Length: 291
Ligand SMILES: NC(=O)c1ccc[n+]([C@@H]2O[C@H](COP(=O)([O-])OP(=O)(O)OC[C@H]3O[C@@H](n4cnc5c(N)ncnc54)[C@H](O)[C@@H]3O)[C@@H](O)[C@H]2O)c1
Image (cartoon, rainbow, N blue to C red; front, side, top):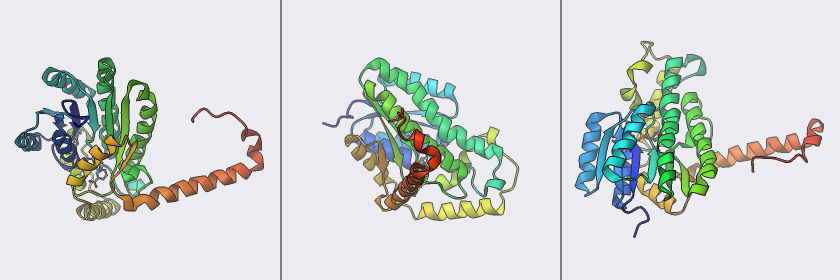
């Protein structure tokens, strides 16, 4: 029997795209699924899709950037299913793109609040419940290959996804004593509507500024890449496979391996130079705290 059967997962941004793919794969493992999303119409459609599969499903409105709304999701999840065993922090937006000098503060704030604080609030809300239950659990943070190496003209997105990878590494160690496994899903391009994220841009982050040429160019490049991406249905199945293998990093695009190899090589070479610097010889033997 699947280790997930009969347990409960909360999936943010579960109304379409990667979130719905993960919800579907978990429902196929006989998990109860709570899909929580800012888009009420798609939420209803996704609920029906999952019900048609025979899933136990609860669909709830959620703006991940609101800690208060996360609390309501937690309460309603407990009311319906009694416990929560997994949170999939999936909701995310393409956010502010374009040349650094064309970025505006509201666009950055939108990207940070949804892609980063949304993940923080999801974990902050669900972890205490998991700890109290003493049955372990899972946190799946949806990062990106952009969290594994900077993407030009997507500074805000890159910053949030890098932060999500780092948070995952920190929480994986912090929560291991509680049997809570923490993973970062790092896809490259997947066929979804991520390039149309502005459709969900909340009122407080709106601006009447026209996009600059670098912003339009970056948006159209992203659209093309996403449309040439992998089929979204693979992603949920891959997450289940990787969770069964207890993977910290979950990759969906093995062809992107040279990206991390190049980065690791550059970092190692920089350390090699620091190791040889006459200025730093006395530091080489000092005890380190991070390992
Ligand atoms: N599609 C890709 O190529 C790709 C690649 C790497 C990572 N990702 C990541 O995958 C995750 C899902 O994106 P997707 O590609 O499925 O995009 P998508 O736009 O198709 O789906 C995003 C979902 O999140 C919801 N959402 C948006 N803002 C929200 C908010 N504030 N609160 C709650 N729900 C919100 C949307 O309504 C939608 O249902 C994101 O974190 C994204 O960064 C996507």
